[in-house]
Image (cartoon, rainbow, N blue to C red; front, side):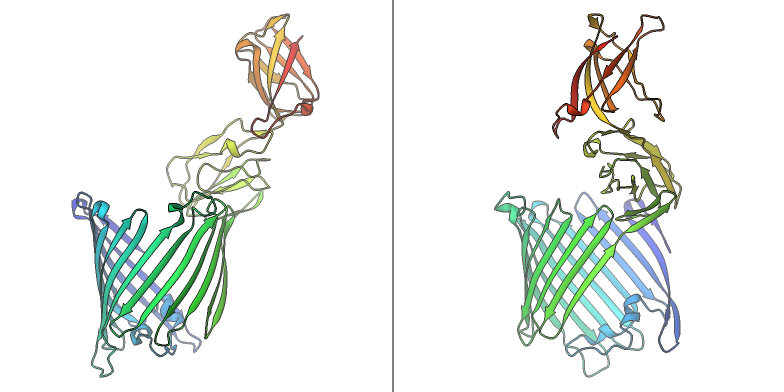
Length: 443
């Protein structure tokens, strides 16, 4: 748990506490807490950002998730020995400065000590980020060293690195290539070791499918590594998979991420949820997108709008451009006011049937402007009505293949008429214009 406070022109301060309990195979159980204080300040006028974090593990028996998973592991040769220790306290700070169109520079540092060891590690790094005609690059320099009473100290390490990313959109507008990029990374330290990596990244299917292929290598018996990964996002969840290969090992990984809402109408899947959500119901509107996020109405007529604002107005809308053919919405948006942790339902009635633009005539003239047209349907749960426009033009949706319209513009005997139509399906339409056009005489 934690809390934060704004200091106005002096930045912001936050404090949080984490409690952890770990149960080991041996039967031992350890519990502990960690405390963190964080300060940050941004100077918009100068483009300066300061991030100062003090983190202290106050008890000996605090195990983070990583600590627990690597407890009593034997480190491989060449791996920094402090990576197997549990942190006791650490101090980190970072400073960055924007240079406008000339890029940015940054400086960061950290100091860490550990439980059951007199080891202290210090890390310092600085670098420059730039962009040249759409090509992003970074140059950095880092130092890390360890201080302890041991004679077997880990040597001080100086490392310089360079990274460049080239988007393919600089060379082509082809849809399947413009979302691709290639990157190259190389680093070298003061002991003569170097490593380099080349990779290709991109996305397809409106960026729902992303992929990455990389190859890394180095000298002095460093292992080469090949990797490929895929990630596919849908309105119902995210799916990922990957394969890694080196001369000593290989691995395959896969993952599924998402959420579900169980309700009276069944189970509705979502890519993400959040503290409060809106369950949207729109029967027969399969595939229709919500105006917020990436959710779509499923085959059962439901979708989930995630991460809505609590105790505030949220406007939930459906994108009418994604509605199925011959499905219309009398209402395209509505407001909801969810409480914390709530699941609020927003129901959108749908009108299933054909759309038509009808030219009406009555006794050799046109129907008066503003007349009310109603589809005569004794089995309908709600009325299907519309208003006659200029020159007797009437737009109606949700029409069956054959039916009768009742038009009324007053209370007198001569202030209403009826018009019957048939074979509406026989009128050709296009995907871009699904509205049928007919002429009817009202009697």
